[in-house]
Image 1 (cartoon, rainbow, N blue to C red):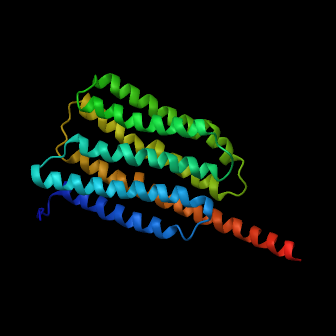
Image 2 (image 1 turned 30 degrees about the horizontal axis):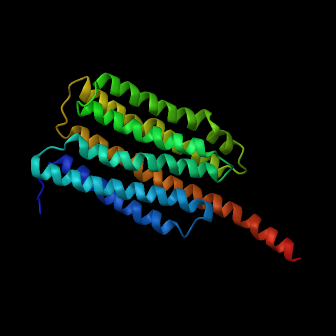
Image 3 (image 1 turned 180 degrees about the horizontal axis):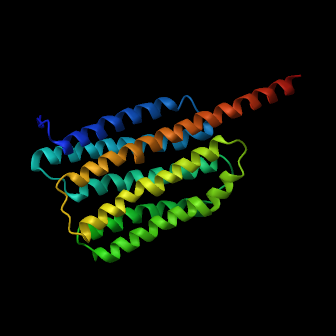
Amino acid sequence: MAVFQTTDLTAASYSVALFGLVATTILLLLGQAWVGRAWKVPVALCAIAALVGAIAAYEARSAWAAAGGVPVVYHYVGWTVSMPLQILALYFLAHTAGKLGAGLFWRLVVVSILMVFVRYLGEAALMHPTLAFLIGLVFWLYILGELFFGRMDDVVSTAPGDHLRRGYFWLRLIVTIGWAIYPLGNFLTAFAGIPDDGSLSVAYNLFDILNRMAFGVAVLATGVLVSAEASPSATSADKGARS
């Protein structure tokens, strides 16, 4: 077992991310019992994304302990799985308010995977870094366009009650502000020539608190509030039918 020094902030940040993501996974799995049936899929997707993040943090911490550095592939393997899962969680969250097409589903899947994969190709020098950065940026902007101006926004904006709209607002804000750390990190390493001496890993791990943990908890909280909001009306309808 590796023993880290007290001043090793990189190792500490990986431990914080690891323990926080494990706790988030457990909370989201328990939360399956607190939400309505329509909300179980988005909550489960967030739980899987948090679990993937925890495994990725564990592997990266082990690499840091063994070599004093974390190759970029350790970050991108986790992002390639968890980020599309989070986008799909948003899709199914919006789907609770109205019908969404299968075409939108597959576009979000493909674009979210390519967004991460293309940036990895650029950082791994398997593709021209500038081209990879720009393509990845376009894919991210496409996702933001769907979240702010597409069918998902239309469905959520017409949903009854405020809880879903408020939750959707904060979640897409996380995708806008929180996810900006990834193209920023890509830019710093590919264009500014800043080596990842552990400081960038610390930034990524701290942003995991927002991008994975807070994201999943926000989905769960929205599901709990919307389910509770729908329960009284359902109960009243049942009573009216019996009378």
